[in-house]
Length: 191
Image (cartoon, rainbow, N blue to C red):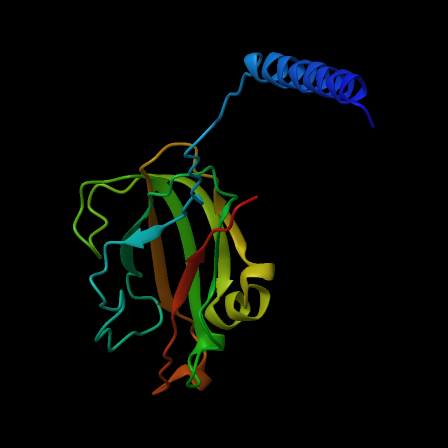
């Protein structure tokens, strides 16, 4: 190759390099971006509490006889979750033990929140009767969440309802001397 051809090649190569640099830097001159961070999500919570402080409603109730004044016990149940839950259902914690359950009349009423202490029903006013029957019947019909007794559907936070449990013994000789141990569970789940 002669000198003129080399000069022309060098000139052409220079022109190509300059064109590439102009195109590359032109492309880099237009740039935009946006971002959305940091993102954080959290799960809702549902919470039910009662005012029993870990003690039984019917602790040490003895000497029940047919025809006597029924024994009333009240308990407050409060919803304090962060999401709208489904209905609060009531069911027997487990099958009652002892032989009195078929002869123990049980009535469950619900009312607005009272200022009464646990067990006291002094200011209780029923807004609905939820169950009337025997303790054994309640435990059979409402033995789990799936078979739970619909009590109320909280719409506020916190929201409290008072429940009155009334028991009396039937006039049946088979009840004499019998006892029963039992418990109740309130449960809600998200819809």
